[in-house]
Amino acid sequence: MCGIVGYIGDKPAVDILIDGLQRLEYRGYDSAGVAIVNGGLSVEKKQGKVKGLSDTINRAELQGTLGIGHTRWATHGRPNDVNAHPHTNSTGKFAIVHNGIIENFTALKEKLITKGYSFESETDTEVLAHLIDDIQKNTMLPIEEAVRQALTQVVGTYGLAMVSADDPDTLIAARKGSPLIIGVGENEYFLGSDAAPLIEHTRQVVYLNDGEMAVITRGGYQVKSIDNVPLEKEVHELEWDLEQIEKHGYEHFMFKEIMEQPESLENCMRGRISIQDNDVHLGGLIDSLDTLLAADRIIICACGTSWHAALVGEYLIEGLARIPVEVEYASEFRYRNPILREGDVVIVISQSGETADTLAAVHEAKRQGVPVYGVCNVVGSTIARETDAGVYLHAGPEIGVASTKAFSAQVMVLTLIALKLAKGRTLSEAEFATYLNAVVEIPDKIREVLLLDEEIQGLARVYRYASNFLYLGRGFNFPVALEGALKLKEISYIHAEGYPAAEMKHGPIALIDRFMPVVFLAMKDSTYSKVLANIEEVAARQGSAIAITDNGMEIERLCEYVIKIPRTEEFLTPLLAVVPLQLMSYHIAVMRGCNVDQPRNLAKSVTVE
Image (cartoon, rainbow, N blue to C red; front, side, top):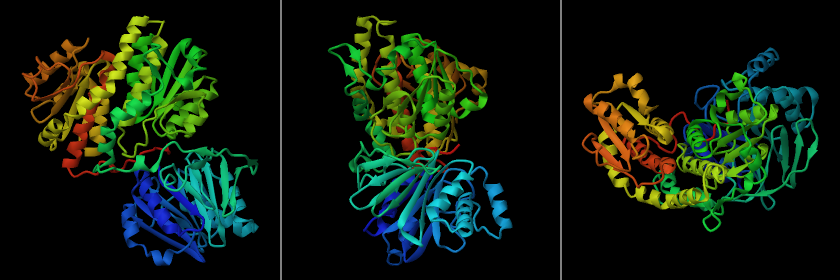
């Protein structure tokens, strides 16, 4: 989950690397470092944010046009200066940065210790540096060949970059399970864990696949397999631009991304909804529609916020199209030896398209011969390339670690899929038209919800010191309760749990007192009377009830706060109900002095298991 950046060209590398690391910091922010080839090799690294590194390095001593940088999210070894990347070999001649986990690093380390190598850090990455050194020292091979041979001994995942003082015109990169992108400029080349550090300099990129290694020189680049087979790689054009990853006056990316949701959903729907034709067009699934319609069962795999979107998708597809759906944690899917049969279809959901556990679910489904479709936001991501077909979110870059607009876009895509599957099957033309018009109205209704921001700030001011929250919802809004609780946990560090409202009396009700805020998703829908009864139960125990509702009349006497949102079709309420929960979490976290864009111990893209 760390961020890697690299540069080779004719410009000073250090500023390009530092700027790139700052754009990658949402991938990890425990520590940061750079290595510059400048006649010798200069390495600077420091615990903490990239700004700390930027403020303390001596740029005059880091002159050079070749270098690598890294911002870390710790796996092996606690965050400190020593464990920060880059790591060097014993002579300090070359440096390496690495994202991923070397599973056999203990065995490799013990073997290297018997050969006289000593280790300064607790990381698995330092083992790679010494392993490459040992191979080169004993074989006198060129550095790229030593790297290739070292990687054949590695068990685990890696995205790595390496530079050597003895080869000042070469940048080496390799990938297995952790993303890397080469940026192609004019007489210069860039490297990044994702597109964020590249956009400022070029939109022409080459995606490395698993088991590939790139040797980048000042005159070009060559990509080979780890087995040393030359490969032809296609150059792609990035869809995003620099303006989309700037804050534009907002204090935090998270708040910007919450406020962008109407536009991101309009982009998500653009070209896909035709009111005139009364139809939904999903170009990425056009050749797979018959397979989906004939499916005996759809299995949706995802992690975190995407898993909550998947749960909404289960309600949508079963409720509208009447196709059985099961939702799986991608992190558990392959480990429980899942039974997949002919007639099954797997859908995977990931904002980044790089989530390691979700990729593992893709591989397991493909191993069993089941069609796999992807829903992701990043064009050219690994999931987009490795699935049989799919749908992009087109939500634009999401920089805040806590996902907001990507969740809404995922739910929107699943809504469009469910409607497409239901048309002519379980929905008449008239019903379909009614629902489609309701979908088109959602962005403007979210704009209405966003106008409640000041009211929600007042609510946040009251509850910012709470130690625990309970979120309750039924039907389509049960997953929204889970998502609301997750948002609060992620960025404010307040313990929160989401439950189906009916489950409250099967345990959680024991926790309720006047110090325990309970957030109810209480829409005037088929579950309303039941949720109202749950609110009565909380009020009877002097609990502090907060309601997100599209009704409000009967609820106001029972709740301390009522946030009223616009009415819509029942299956669309998650798209509106989640927004006040996002805003409440955001404002509570800000009032508690938390870093909402970079919450502790979390990173945006989970590329390690």
